[in-house]
Image 1 (spheres, rainbow, N blue to C red):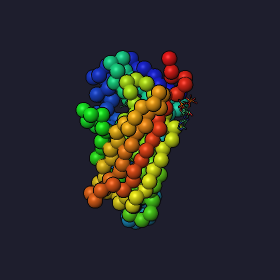
Image 2: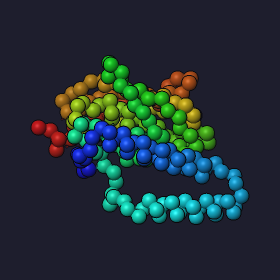
Image 3: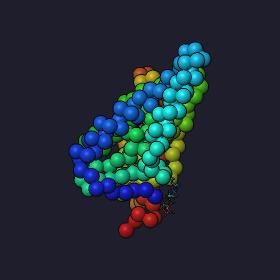
Length: 206
Ligand SMILES: CCCCCCCCCCCCCCCC(=O)SCCNC(=O)CCNC(=O)[C@H](O)C(C)(C)COP(=O)(O)OP(=O)(O)OC[C@H]1O[C@@H](n2cnc3c(N)ncnc32)[C@H](O)[C@@H]1OP(=O)(O)O
């Protein structure tokens, strides 16, 4: 499992964020444009070649696997490949998840064309993805890992593509198990309710 420490300081983290963040954002836009474009065939073929060439340039030097979750000596966490919050992951919406003083975690975000299931609606698996992340981050206590054991969803009504909110809070802790509840909402209220059991794995227990 790739939890690693990188010997870099906060200013180097900031430099990398400024470098990779805009690249990820433009690739994210490219995904949306690829779904929605109605330009002519020749333009599609030209852009295909340009994107192929750009991809080959990036691949000229790359890591031999996923990004992993890296920490700096200053304790900064870099989950930059994460499918929901990853700074370097263009398929991440991405979510910025804030923690209230009472421990509730919240996020406001927009899901566009890349997250469609039924027409105009968010794919159910994407609802699960977002809720797993926010419930999982809510379950984290200090530097202890916490893995999803069970995630239960109730889809109360369809979730429209567009601006959304998610929130989560710890319901209770029983030994190595943290029970978290949360929801996904649109402007009219809750669309999906979630309950999760997050577990400190045996290999991480003292
Ligand atoms: C800003 C950057 C910061 C960086 C910071 C990192 C950020 C990065 C993001 C973090 C947020 C990630 C949010 C996504 C979270 C995932 O996506 S995690 C990935 C999906 N989950 C998995 O892959 C888990 C796979 N399963 C496993 O690894 C193991 O089965 C588990 C769940 C760890 C449990 O195994 P175990 O440790 O051997 O557990 P075990 O000792 O048998 O049982 C312990 C207790 O749990 C119960 N239990 C066991 N399995 C289950 C289960 N599946 N369901 C319910 N209860 C269970 C047992 O009954 C037992 O209960 P008690 O007897 O204590 O009452």
